[in-house]
Structure formats: structure tokens, C-alpha cells
Length: 97
Image (tube, rainbow, N blue to C red; front, side):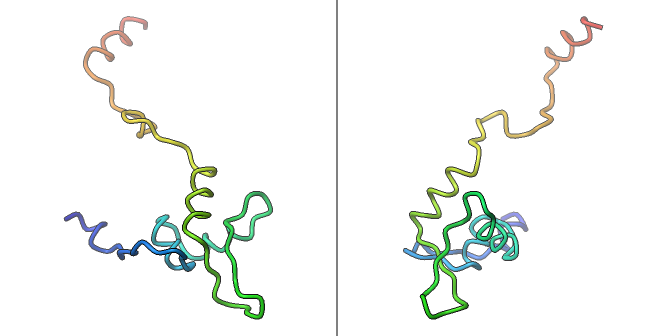
């Protein structure tokens, strides 16, 4: 197993997630999760009990919807911004010069 996968915590499927859960699920820091929750345009829709200051949580359904609105689909083969060119592509590029 790659080292990166060994260090990640497993988050079980549940109805509501904490800031720490979302941080792990999205692979970003907890401060970034809080920043995304506080941004003016399409914030992460966290909730908290009316009388509480701490303990934000987000419904799984709302998290999924937010992620779908705020990410782009990476098509297979186009995931790397600088993909390697095959020998055929290099040859045709060199002919243009």
C-alpha cells in the first residue's frame, strides 16, 4: 500500500459529517474547510444547533451536492495538465518546426 494511503483515516458512511470528517474526505485542511464554509458565494452548507457556537456538521446529501457544483469532472487521459507525448505525437510536432 502506498504511504499516502496508509496515513489517511477511514471515514465511515454516515448521515452527517464534522469539519474533521470533511477535511479527510476532501483531502484538505480543517482551516480550508472552515474557509469554504464561510465564503460568500456557494459556501459549504454546514449547520450547528441553534444554541451552540461549536460543533458544525453537514449532511452527506448536501456535501455531495456541493462537491458536484464546485468541482470539475476529470476525463480519463486528461487528468495530468502536462501529459507525456507518445513517439508519434513528437514526430508530427517536430515536422511543424
